[in-house]
Image 1 (spheres, rainbow, N blue to C red):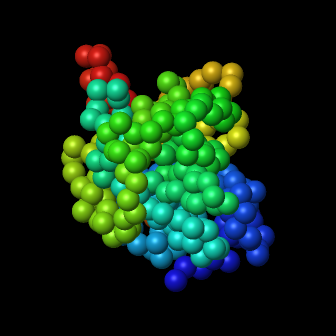
Image 2 (cartoon, rainbow, N blue to C red):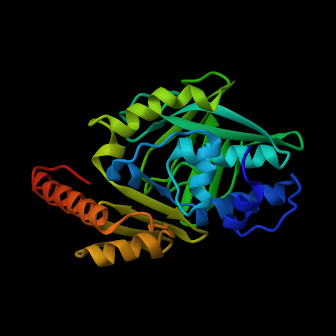
Length: 283
């Protein structure tokens, strides 16, 4: 069981909520605007689970997570409100060269409503602001243009193609339903392996109607219709102000020593990236 009322309070949505398309869109907008995509606990050395109850509890206390947390929690909320929700095995391609298909590094959601299916995904960071219909075509949301196509790699599944300015290229998901628990092993790998991007780079991302704010290490970017603004954060105080202000994160449970250690980790990683960047790598 999850605390539906507390979750809706975080989203700023007053109950009761009827399972309509209008409500679904409002809930999705509120989720991505108020619940940040972030991986701070990995860098704080705090292992997390991905059960829906645990992820909802994280959200209620002012934190976020990545796809397994965010879509796991959001899917549970929608199901509790009466929506017909399906969890899908999916895969995100960071670059066009990455293997296509539902590799299992992403959890996608669909909702069937009034005879139509919708991609509902609050776990893609800088991507969708509202649900997308599972219909082939292009869709504009704020500064981004997306495309939905049938997946060539997953017969019966779908492929979400991100805008060229996005943080990844595409996401494929398979048609068959899966259980949240089936992602446990991949969650362990993504949150502990030195090869994982989540382990290598701390990130926070928050979408809104006009664009997206993205923090990667010490680099803060704002992408909107006017273009991309980018700056490097130079002090721990400013960095924590950004996390709590721009990204709405409640960090009251992170004591001063842990804050200092986290800033040192991020600062050191940034300096190493600058050195490596001179050889052509990117953050």
